[in-house]
Length: 315
Image (cartoon, rainbow, N blue to C red; front, side, top):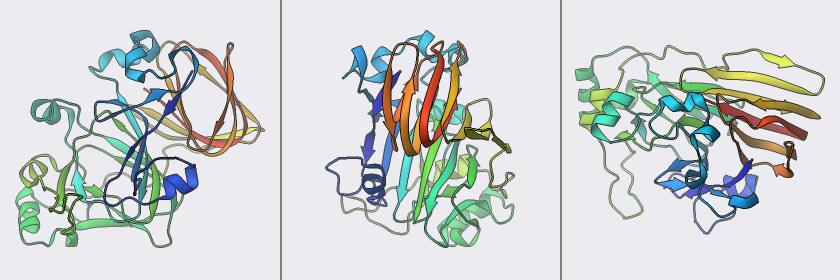
C-alpha cells in the first residue's frame, strides 16, 4: 500500500479550503486543485511510505500492480483530484478518446464529480437547456450569448454528476468536490468571464475544437448516485457509478470495513472526512482526511478501521 503526496495547482479560480479543511501544506497563494492520484506528466504523486518512499508512483508501478483490467489502457487510466472553486471555472468541454489521441496525444476525458460541500445557492453548468445545433452553439459563443443556452443546476452536498466527454460544463463558485476522471489534462475553454490569467493576459479559448467535440444536448443523466445506500452494522456503502472506465463508491465507516484487492484492479482510497487506520497482512498506518492510498492489485484483504468517509475507485 502506498500513501501518496498530492500535487497542487494554483489556478486563478481557486481558494484556500484545501489548506484549511484538509490540512494540505504548500506555498501557493491559491490552492485550486490537489491531484491525489496522478501519473500524469503535468503532476505526479510521490510515495510517502515504505521501501519506495520518495519515488514517483509511475516509477514503481508494474502491470501486476495495476491489475488485468488496466491492460486495455495505453496509459495509467485514472486521475483523481480534490477541487476548491472559490470562483467560477471556465465554461469548457473535453474531447473523447478518438479526438484527443489524434489531436492531443493523450486520452479524452470522461469524469465524474462528488459534491463534498458547497455554499448556499451554489450551482454548476451541465449541458444545455435545449438541444441546439453546432452552428447555433458557435453563433452563441461569437455573440456572447452562450450562457443563455446552458443548463444550470443548484447543487447540494452528496450530489453526483457523471460528465461524459463532449458534455459542456463548468463548476460554479463555492463548490468543493472530488473528481474522478480519465488520465487527461486536455480542456477546451469556451467562455472565461473575460478574466486575466496569472500572466496578466486573457486565458486562451479553444472555440474550433470545442465546437468539434461538444454534444449540443440536454443532459441525459440525473444528479444522484447510481446505486442505493447499502447499510450494515459498522459501515454504509453507496455506488456512485460503474462504467467501462471506472467504478466509484462512497463509504461511511462507523467502525470498520474490509476491502479486497484481487488481480483485476488496483484500489484507490481517498479519505474525505474523519480518520482511522488502514492495514494489510504486512503493514498498518494511520489515515486522515485528505489522504490518498494506492492499493496494488492482488494485495488481498485490506481492513480500514475508524470513523471516516472515503471514496473507493477501481478500474
